[in-house]
Image 1 (cartoon, rainbow, N blue to C red):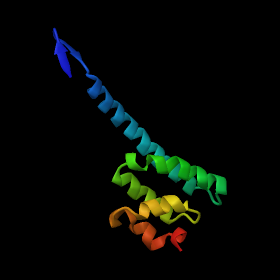
Image 2 (image 1 turned 90 degrees about the vertical axis):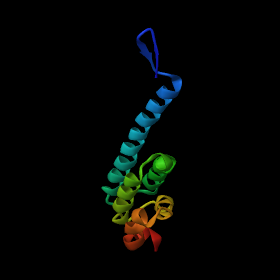
Image 3 (image 1 turned 120 degrees about the horizontal axis):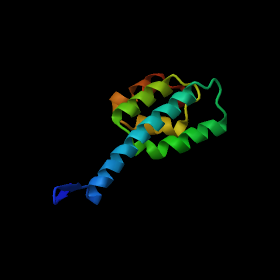
Length: 108
């Protein structure tokens, strides 16, 4: 932030950082909400499984470890968990992947 004649201005770099933080929050909420909604489906279609992968995998790098852990735990109880998402979560450290490694039917 710079000041000119007592007026504060936000630099473009500062603005980008603010935008990135705002987008990160959206990615977190979207990542968790879509998986939660998916897990509530009793028998998801192939299309719904593919849609979940299409939505969550691009967000993966932008979400926190806590969100990854939450999603791994949720999907570990889900009979029709998307294989690509489960595999990606299993590549995470054991504190994230443990629920899937122990309980997921998608790995068998």
